[in-house]
Length: 152
Ligand code: SF4
Image 1 (cartoon, protein in one colour):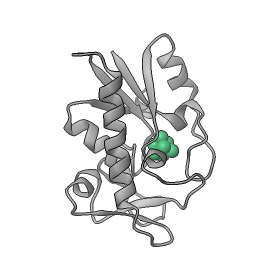
Image 2 (cartoon, helix red, strand yellow):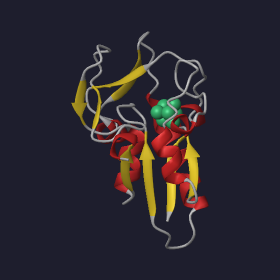
Image 3 (cartoon, rainbow, N blue to C red):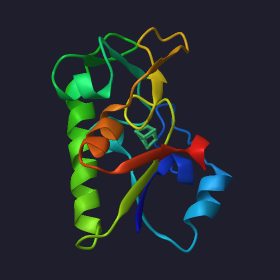
């Protein structure tokens, strides 16, 4: 089994504010397991620190279909970077996995990239809506099971 982990959950300072979301449970969970870390927002070309962004007009699936956008709090459209980062993450995962190896992702909850099940609703008011982040939606569409740190 190959695990895919949001880099910020393992202490990488790639969060929008320059910090991380280190999670002891996730770190303990993947000990002795084979895993790779991803950070779709930075691999998609966004800098750290960066202005936070949320999905507007839909969630991950709609963004991937071109029916919704990812917008920074300052109004910048960062959809392209989020979609590119999702595909870069998928490429990295495919490259790292052995032929036929099962893959499971544990990603950062609520994030417009990594969140799974519930994500911020585009209001920048800390409100959630059902749906997945762009990367989580892409991975799910490829049959990869996606959990968040809250499931560990
Ligand atoms: S939630 Fe995902 S995209 Fe955001 S900092 Fe963590 S790994 Fe990177």
